[in-house]
Length: 496
Image (tube, helix red, strand yellow):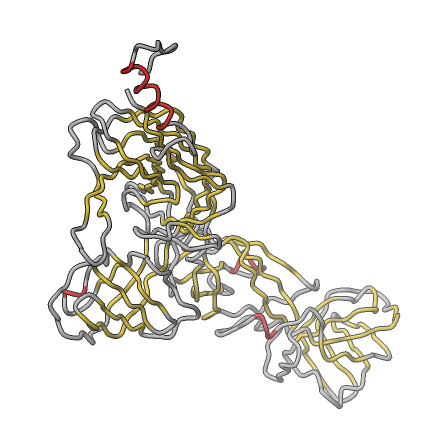
């Protein structure tokens, strides 16, 4: 360390003091470097620049089926998607993985350089070394992108410095505020690791494109290449994927007459295949409009295979205005013009404005001038704007809670007793049409600060980088994105 105060005759002390000043903060010497930003950025997952993006970047892409694989040249390979994608799924520099090809040569982790071009129809990757042509593969395969369990993914926080003396010290400061997001089909642990790593630069010996190649400096006798690290362990990331997103009714019918309109039931569906659980539904009983039929039985059917929400409305249909309502021996006679769009035997109808007979009934007799329905209600009808209408009761399904662990094709059962009927007689069967595998949830923000980390690597040209690892341990979690806010890293060489 330079002396203070320095005597006039102490030439060595003067030299040390000058060197110390020259190695100080930015503007005073060449041995100070760093990066800082408070602008929002997103991790790309690349091992080459750009390490971050100003716009949202996914760090996980679901597996995509491929049709062909081929070599374009000794370092460039093209994978064609089996179906056109809605948008280019991969970013330049992404390190993608392919598998399931007939030719095992194409089943690989493509790094470096990674993705060179991506469209909605294909993705092209490049590697650093020249390889022999394995010939095309048309047997199909699969490609995906994941940053889970890949060690030390670089951020834009980095600094390059030159160390000239064996006892020179590098003072490093770094901070990172990050918000990772994930998806998981079951409860999963996560160890989110943030490290300051040191890489040693060596010239590439390329006379036409001179530069440096940086390798992880794990053979340095002066100290480990990881100069500082923090672990953030989360033991139970909640499931987010495998939620039921859409269902189709594949069977069942319900002939329970309804006396109220509408009726909503909240039910927990019972899985009958697959490993999913906790799918809850809101089932709203509604009249169906524009689907009139003379073959309907009392009260329904209000669901059938292929039912979709677009078939339904909250409004009843087929209004008629009776002129009289009378009751005798448990039979209610409704005088009405039934000659057009008639109600028929075994249909159901709802009567309003005819107290005390308001309700839903099964038609037992139907003529052009009157309708008879069975009833146990007795009394004298009071006609006040009396209307009857065919409710054609049906169902609208709303997924209240998609549950976890479901896949397309799983089957569900809704018990008849849960929707106003009888178990085994009025059950509803469903099939999962889609799952929300792409959903994700944010992890709480991590605010990491490394202050005054001291490294003594010995003479050389070094690159210090703030890097992250998502170790999902034995879980199913995939890291879908990682947002950065304020962040930075500085490295300063100080003469000893």
